[in-house]
Length: 321
Ligand code: SF4
Ligand code: SF4
Image 1 (tube, rainbow, N blue to C red):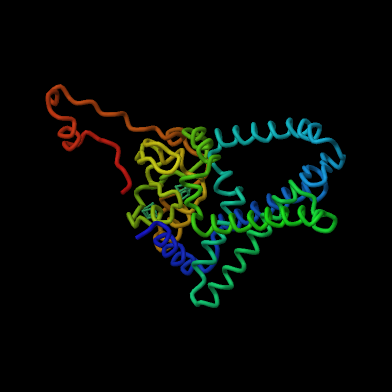
Image 2: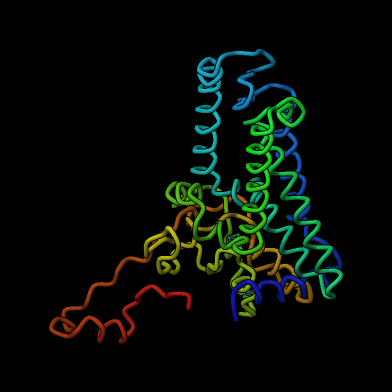
């Protein structure tokens, strides 16, 4: 069964059992809404805006030439990127799991799909998702084109601006509905960059209490990145997928979304023991992908085929099927 359908089923079962959204979902929505509003405020208040139509470029409320605007923006742009690099290197990929607006919209699409049972609900869900995609694209559009193009522009300018906006909305909607979180797993260029930074961090998912684990595998079934949350450290190295070559660790691919922890908490509510998975500051031994050392053949194995000594239990890293 495709990952998405299994994930939908488990998430919907857990939500029913829990009787509401998990605390990570509340945090995620809070951060995503605050971040989107902050970004929307930039062009709305002329804090940063390039006007490809009328040439009225703005930076911090002042109208400047294009080169001047870009020059002024260069320093904050570099500072923001440096902050992202440091945060991803030391804390892990929380930006993907809790801040990225694309991720938030893809999760909203999942949420709508899980709850839409009848044809009428599915149509309403499509409408709601289109409205959200439209709002996000309106924000992006505002960075590049002054809205007055629709009231003061020539017919040609209105047609080009209208087509640009409509194309943006349709592309975003198709991407969210067709790829959803699979885009984050396979195709997001920023994700590759974060994964390269993320082989080691001070914060993330830890298999803290293996003794409580019932091997229900709910954590694996809900992971949008198709990882093995119990093998963050010293665990499996995965086959290549999307932009990624073979050998990426669970630890570097993990977007710190907390779905596995929420699933583990949901399946553990009946037991008295501690929850097996947790997300937060990591102890020393769990701060990197820590790949198991490649076992070398013992002296008596020399002369045998590698596959023979691997089968004999030499500890080749496991792979998720
Ligand atoms: S391992 Fe857990 S926190 Fe990491 S991506 Fe998968 S579900 Fe999210
Ligand atoms: S969800 Fe928790 S109990 Fe179930 S397999 Fe994963 S770690 Fe073990």
